[in-house]
Length: 86
Image (tube, rainbow, N blue to C red):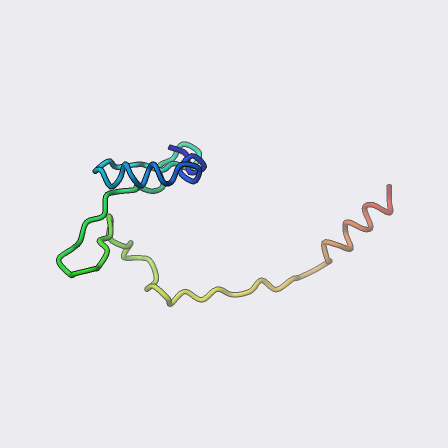
């Protein structure tokens, strides 16, 4: 099912999951997520991951996002120059 369909009909898909059905969500035809019935793990109240994290991925919360520093000519100035040339 496409993600837009899931968004539009979330209530009915949640009901289907409660009844034991597994729903696969796709993006442009490629599976990206599964909606499964909720199941308690051995640790009371914890949520079970469907797959382990990639061992090459950085630890959760440690990723630093750097800002992009603009370089060269301003895109607004380029657009204005292009419009003026017409």
